[in-house]
Length: 447
Ligand code: B12
Ligand code: SF4
Image 1: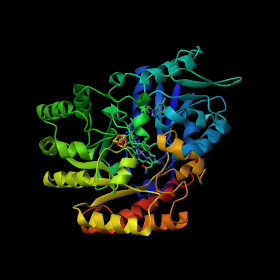
Image 2 (image 1 turned 30 degrees about the horizontal axis):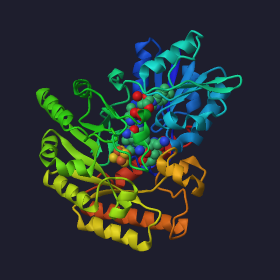
Image 3 (image 1 turned 180 degrees about the vertical axis):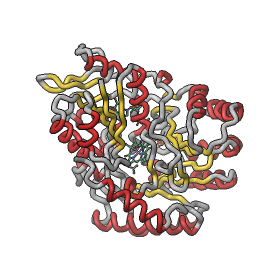
Image 4 (image 1 turned 120 degrees about the vertical axis):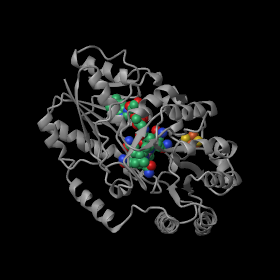
């Protein structure tokens, strides 16, 4: 049996600029799972591939194509499926990943045979074996499968993520293909799922049945030892959750003499309450902390159920600054913004020791609480616009086009402010030419 594992291409600002090109760890997990059960697997990473998809299909002749996707990639996935159906009509198509976990019903496209809701690799293996041996699918957790009368949906229970294998990383090379802003050669690492908090707009917290679960630190350290590059991006929605777990992490890094740089997500309140611990993390290599600052108005933070405040956010930036770390401030352009709010936000950033600010537009991702409360107000239906830099509902105090203009204008100003403060050093003339060249090479690959 042969399986082709696909991350779909999407040409948007993020992927074209290549400023955050992340390792396709989800595909590498699937690859590892295939190899464990003797299934031949290959990876087609549409984000980077320059070979046409049909060419890869024809040369590899897979029995199964497994595709991972985010909400923005729904339409491009339909195109991949039509290519599969054209060249390999009997090939089975499986969709999975974070978007499929909670939005499986949206993915019953023509040509799809299975949608998986589980993060479990043994569930994926069970599915492959059932396809190969023509067995029944009805005991596979969280599986949705096509029958003559539509899709049948099995019950889902979150898997035990301590059972995830240590992934092999065939895509990870020291050749600059994966970067996170100014860091080159970055690996991705997942040590936990979901998040113990419940901010109203957040999608990540509802994953894994809404239950936060962390992998044992011994396994995490074991995995880090296998990573062949110098920077590790820990992609847990919130890595800074449990003080004793973090102390065990620091001890493990020291004991194994690991010398790497780390990037992680964390909350402002935790950082403020644990300055000494943050200092220790920095001493073992943590350098970028992505913090959900979100806003500069307490009433907005309260509305988002963020459980932080403007004062706490400022204290957090000061703590990270004292520890010699870089705070990457994740901020929200709320749909209630007026021109003066965009201006205030800029003035506030200017008053803080911040170089990197990511400004996303408040976006209701299905099926978050925020989405359920605002679904009647949506003005956009194209899933690719759910990229957090387009308003998908009407801004309250200005026309959508003007809101978008204010967002872009402020983002450009923030970029130049950051650059003045030493950030975005990778954006050089040569880099822009390279990104454009690589864009042209990827045009036309979804055929
Ligand atoms: C790192 C990251 C990125 C990276 C890219 C990572 C990547 N691998 O492509 C960057 C920074 C570029 C990015 C960009 C975006 N991201 Co992002 N990102 C994340 C983050 C923090 C971690 C994702 C990750 O790498 N996890 C590690 C892997 C191993 O875990 P996993 O994907 O869950 O995979 C497991 C299972 O789901 C399963 N699985 C996955 N795929 C498949 C497929 C099959 C067939 C099967 C059987 C199983 C399976 O197996 C894996 C092992 O258990 C998540 C939040 C989070 N904590 O999950 C948001 C998140 C995935 N991103 C999100 C969004 C919206 C985006 C953007 C669209 C917008 C934006 N500006 O951020 C862009 C789109 C980029 C694009 N490619 O088009 C949303 C997705 C919401 C949704 N419903 O789709 C999330 C959940 C954030 C959030 N809270 O809203 N992102
Ligand atoms: S926004 Fe951050 S803290 Fe809030 S639920 Fe999501 S991951 Fe957790």
